[in-house]
Image (cartoon, rainbow, N blue to C red; front, side):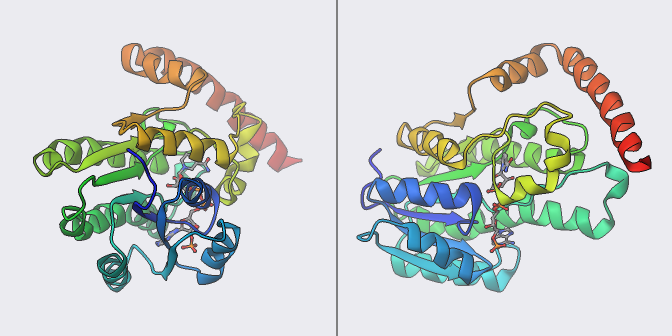
Length: 265
Ligand SMILES: NC(=O)c1ccc[n+]([C@@H]2O[C@H](COP(=O)([O-])OP(=O)(O)OC[C@H]3O[C@@H](n4cnc5c(N)ncnc54)[C@H](OP(=O)(O)O)[C@@H]3O)[C@@H](O)[C@H]2O)c1
């Protein structure tokens, strides 16, 4: 599928992976509707777009009904061929450190809001001749990772939602793509910087992640996984989950004592 002149709606376009997706789509000649709560962040993204890009900024909270109504109205005016549910929150740390309101925030932003926005936009997507929904999950939507339990649960849910919708919307010829980046150098990654070295995480460049996602959308892929060792881990998780239990359980034990020693020093 060519993205030129396609109307692409990107949530969370004011930073990180969403901004990189917006820039990569603009390079392909797409028309953009960029969503986020902070207008200033969206404007920063807009300043980076090629001069001839047709774009509209919508400052809206996807977790609120009025915010989603604003997005629907913008899509009614400017059209929508592809919805990219990218906005999300990356929460880390031991589960014991998360309060009830943190859990509600994670599940609302990463699961309930993209599901509700999808529901609200499907009638408009049906008007497109090549509609597609793209959900940005995570490798942690396949591999339950210590110190990211609630976040993992939210991305597992988004993956299940994507599979269900791909089958439900087949009758309407709306394609559904689930993309699972690995750890990526974005503002969200600042929140888990203390876990990067202990868990030997590699951080991808957002532009590389976005290029992979755009290529996958053009190929109308159902699932976009990263290459490298993560792909092997995902297969191991499916075939031999006890191996992943052992490796990450051992790592978690070492990280916990390391962090306790650091805290005591
Ligand atoms: N960074 C990673 O390591 C990594 C790895 C795999 C997957 N991911 C996924 O990639 C996606 C993007 O993450 P990122 O790393 O690029 O994080 P980021 O830089 O923090 O970007 C998240 C964006 O979402 C927007 N947002 C958050 N809540 C929103 C809401 N309620 N309504 C509208 N917009 C909202 C934020 O803008 P406002 O604050 O202005 O609303 C922000 O621009 C997320 O779904 C994340 O789970 C990230």
